[in-house]
Figure 1 (cartoon, rainbow over the protein chains, first blue to last red):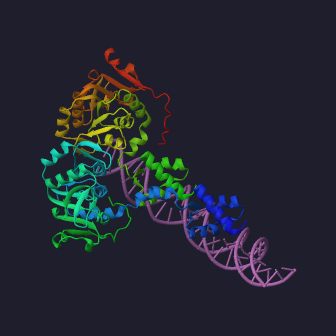
Figure 2 (figure 1 turned 180 degrees about the vertical axis):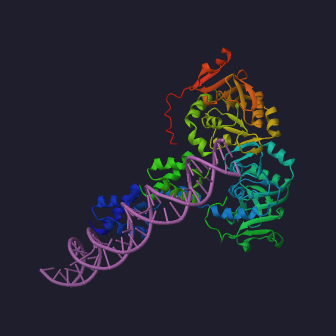
Figure 3 (figure 1 turned 60 degrees about the horizontal axis):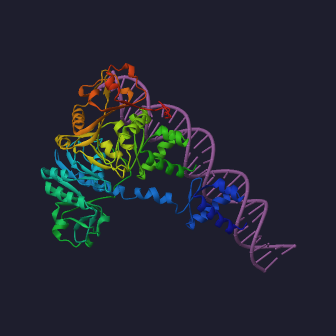
Length: 264
Length: 264
DNA sequence: CTTAATTTGCACGTTATTGATCGAACGTGA
DNA sequence: TCACGTTCGATCAATAACGTGCAAATTAAG
């Protein structure tokens, strides 16, 4: 069998079987494992397969994308932003926290020694704080919405109306170049607005990937927030906003981040 | 099995089971616990899972269930009881569900085609129902209590007062030989009582290990319930109760359940 | 048929993965 | 709070897989 033909056949074989070992290929094509390795090396250079210790995987296999996409959704980026946001919290403050993955990261970064009281309508926020001793958590009850997961209903509004919090941390899933914050969910957009009303100070928290997008439901304008916390991937020159609003931006640095797990 | 494939398989396994122990994974994949730890470390760096002392949790559903209770208490027993309890639910009913591991099992066994509305103050219950399409969930909001995890406060009482549910499923952590239900938590004991008041029919759900124990806070007497659901490990002759109350007992069979070998 | 070029297989040093050990860290219950 | 049992992680040794160099085998060209 010609070399080139065999390599093509190996590529097909890997594609069909998704996962193969070097030994397996060696037996299948009656050549030494050394030859198989050389073949796999070539095929990998062509991008046809992906090598791994012990064998090879088909290049575009679903397993590759499947689980890994979730991991790469800026998990460390959100953590950096969350850490920066947590710095703004003072002792014994009552904090309103919005719904979203960045807010979940914020919940995990909360200082436990300040005696904070956290108020939220997000299930994920509460889950993140289940083990957080030293943090008082109040969950606004209501009907469970599944995507995204949060609680809504008149009792959420009532509670927020009768509440005076120190700070509200609002997540933004869409932030236009003109500085307009919108959200894809009409109910949570309304809850965000009420949270802002109920707090003395309002913080907008977002990562730079949200800039330049818009959703259906208006939440607020950039000038309605006291502080805007964002990562250092933001291109400030692209924003068509006044200098007064620019001064509200606080940039979280992502350079010194290591993948070392939590120290608590 | 290739290293990378195994790690992906572990990620999938964790995702499906929500909670796994290192020992469990070690046996499942026939590798040492040390290797499992190394795999889990990698997977955590990728953000695919969350590690805990003793094992790992799926990253998405971060319900921090105590690993030990899940691993040591007979989970399948609770499941059998839960399945029996679920049989009592009818179409479009509004159901109050109490807090506890058996109640969590009940939440996971709920029929999704009946159009049920579930009302609870338990975090674990909501977590169990996060993916339950077809089940309407209302969470009674309030302050988060950490052990056990539930929400309490005046708004819980208010909501229950203005509510008329079809059925209430109450968990019992202590059931004396005389048929007195008590609870270790004073707040949740009060919430149990109010749940019973708010429902047309009341169901007590417990496993036989709870019999013969008492806690500080009175909840109710056996005669206050319409139905008492228990597993077949109960020794009915040990109970000093009237025949009228005995007739309320419904025994869930665990006969066809293969029990998990306890590797302690 | 001869020779050069390429490919293959093998030996051997290098690297990766695994399992065992043991002190440290963690969580639990008294 | 303390002591106890369990789990964790750094380290080492063993095994398996890898890659380079070289010689043998095969193919292509003259």
